[in-house]
Length: 393
Ligand code: LCS
Image (tube, rainbow, N blue to C red; front, side, top):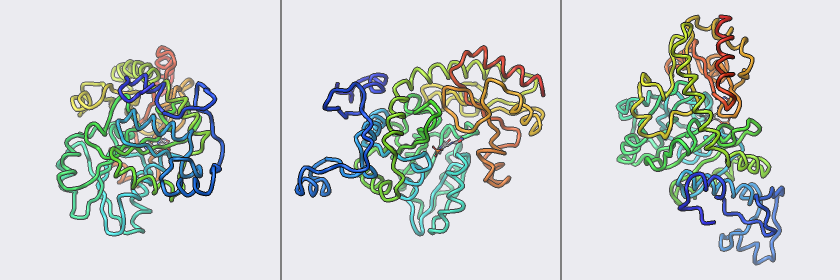
């Protein structure tokens, strides 16, 4: 089936373009490190690019290509570059666009290590970073320098749920010749398509919603144009942060049910958000589906739904948070997100603990912030679990 013009759900099932010669219904796992050439001439043509045959799995592999092609179609991009983890994708993008004497403007509320490496590793290579509250485009405008090469956005941001205006920021960036990369992990292409809004590159921790079953770690970069793809792909290959065929197979399998998983988790999350806003022990709730979210209107414009991630604060602060974490019975106390199981975690002591307290505060990560990833269990059970755990505070 030609999937280019098909609907999103048909793409989830049928995109990929790798046809098994024996006719298997799913793309097999080509668990091989290397591929034999038909002849010396064929080998030479594979290397020169005259033949699109496979060479070596770090460079490319049919099982991985199936996933890369699918993600590129879902994001409306030119090509996908799968990586061994989400951080592999982040580093592939940073290393491609940044170098000695260059500057990046990055959302201040961002997954901890995506910011952390800009503070600790990239300065060693002469890269300077400015972190801004990207909910206000003026902050980005003011942060741009002569040597700014990349604007890096995460929207909604982990874990503050802040939303940045992708379209307006891309217009600003492009007027100054700056590339824009959006980490689309919290939405997936089902809820948001950054490339359609003007971004040059989109990336994911596929560990989350894309795979959705908490059984692998994986990442991907999708480039909008052939030109960017041709810069990004060799970087991934040379950094050696490629994916394994087994990982690709599981991710492609998980991806098939993306829309029905997100529909169910989101439906649950809307009810959980409503429940939490009314709870006397909860001081605040941040969820793009709530009218009091500061960027509620923007979220409605650029996202197809509010998603299944929620952040909230407890009146009792840090201690109350600790008590809640130790009292949940259905939700797993675990980092990661976007899976079929409900997860709860405390960013200040877990995912964002490597940032300084000032860094966390500047990023809006208060000590009372609880991050909740809503799964696809029965919502009555999710709420019953929160009820009994909140009662213990
Ligand atoms: N981008 C975002 C938005 C993430 O949430 C994560 C991981 C990454 C990139 C990195 O992806 P990874 O290498 O782990 O596949 N986020 C995590 C979190 O919130 N808890 O544990 C991991």
